[in-house]
Image 1 (cartoon, helix red, strand yellow):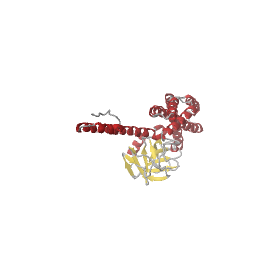
Image 2 (tube, rainbow, N blue to C red):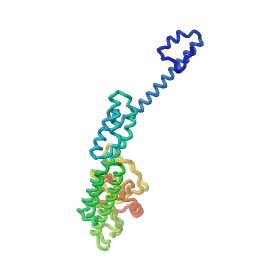
Image 3 (cartoon, helix red, strand yellow):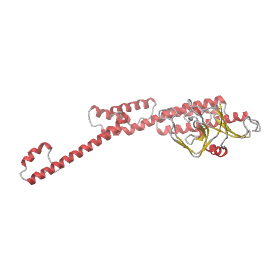
Length: 347
């Protein structure tokens, strides 16, 4: 009797063999067994592959139990902030029921993953904007204490944005709040930069010349004001907001001279990822080396133009010791400052 892929289970094979009376029947039986064995192996391999894929899916959470904990935690945080939790709660309940019933949880897990990732992204955006609001408040406080031109209106604008943030529940509303935060940050930074420039100008002579700097081409960087000024034969040519070294990696003070030029320049950290001095590899268009140990004046295309200036050295844009200059200004500076140009970094 011939045996096909749909033949009885292997437990019936001894009886089938006993019933086979001819060499042809035995050969057909053997062929059927091999086919059944091949099917079983293929099915086992497919099952193993699916199991591996499922394990990889839940691995970032530490397994199904960890996924349940993560979803429950995300729901708790979303409810505390009154954010739209979507259908995560019902999907989590479905998964918990399957786990309690010792049922196949694959469908429940796959159904929960996407909405949970969306909710966690929403929570991340909410936390990011809360931090941005804190930074903005600090900037406004500086503007008020400095009595910048538009400082009186910043607090009211901030209050409106903070109120909108407080009632934002979904990604669209949070994105709208973020746009308002960024717009006000730009206004505050522009006001602070203008105040710094005015204060610096007040220190210069009425004619702009005769300043107490060496003759020739000189770059003076004020760390306290985060401003670089460019002089030629004691005459002020222009100034720009900059960003210098962050806490713990401050830009050194002193008098230096340009002794290296690169365009473009590729920067690679000498420290490993675990070090606070580590930074990801970056490429800039213009770089002037003025001090051994890798201290440059260079552009920083990754830094938002509004982020340069007062206080920027203490924020996320703070450098690892170099002096960041806005790209347009750095292009001019690179063409103007030759080898030997004096660089004075003051407190």
